[in-house]
Image (cartoon, rainbow, N blue to C red; front, side):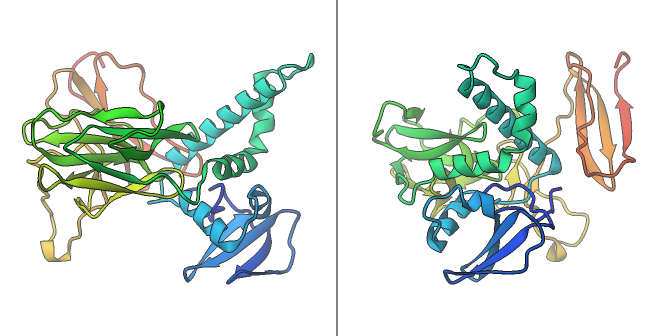
Length: 337
């Protein structure tokens, strides 16, 4: 479930039967045992973090400072939906079962992928933690670039998703990709796209050239304003990937597609008691290809899906753990849906 207590290393749920071990200011002590699994809690910067003991065992030299740094790389910027967590679960399971199949390919009695998938289900926290400590670095590459010059970025693969690890005007190896080439137009905005783990894309926009990007599930965009032709941008890394741009003015609200300049908020309640939302989703309207809408209500509005002429059959995006009595409302705009 989305609101369950989760291991700070693997981000999988912590069972109530786990054995608890506490670490305060670097000293470890055991608390009463409840089962065969283990749990560490680490006191760092005045808050308590928890992790499975077997995840901790995957981290070499787990001193409190190193553990806190690695855990920071897996910290959620916001709590993702149950569906997003389910997608992550399936991606990691697919990656691990494929690696198991390849690793044991030399054996005559190698298991089929379907059986390795069952085995992988029991190893997901181990795999996620081992992959995390393999990618994390206490001294990540610095990210600093001037927008008057070409900008290159280095990507990193984490759990089946591609994130920006660093950017620079001077790439240090052949695996860096060009993401921005100055054209003479004055860049006024940078659109930062990412999910709950970090930045996945940077788009550069002039006043006459706004980006046209389709909505992608789980990806949210913030607009950063750039002052001056020779402005520099800097990125903050968590040791694996970039989390945000530093020392810039950015939108409080994240958008499911890059925000246009003519968007404004309208509130049904007095503005002095209203705060800006953390995220805003878009909805296509007035398009000839749209033939209807499906509205899914499950203890509140879950989603509004746009039906188009050429789409496959739509299935509501429900996830395990939600109520068993959703209400789906279909609004037909054109005969034939």
